[in-house]
Length: 128
Figure 1 (spheres, rainbow, N blue to C red):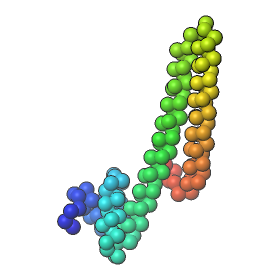
Figure 2 (figure 1 turned 90 degrees about the vertical axis):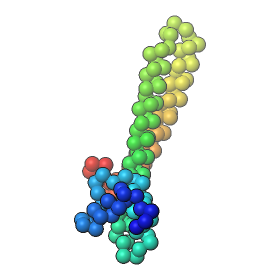
Figure 3 (figure 1 turned 180 degrees about the vertical axis):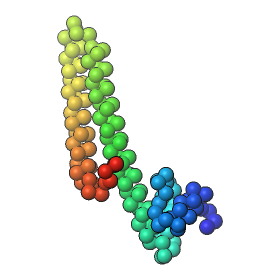
Figure 4 (figure 1 turned 30 degrees about the vertical axis):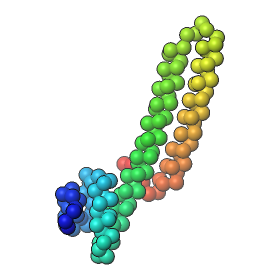
């Protein structure tokens, strides 16, 4: 067990007593445990749990990043509308073009979000 972090060791002990991963495990610790379990043929269940956790964490992070970028697109559009001088036709035209661009980006991100969710919903928990 030399070279194993204390967090990974703590998670490994938790697994040995409960046959589950700790609820507060990080993705780095799960990766470290997965590598450790790969070296021992008797720890295939631990490796499977770690890989499932890493997949779930990666999916959750991708979904959260997409939602964050959607929120950013809406904020950019709102700021554009609020800051545009409504008495200058050139600025209004530019703002409309930029707003249309942000809407198109937002729609594509929403479509990606829906596709990721639909593809992975059977593997997600209710909380996720």
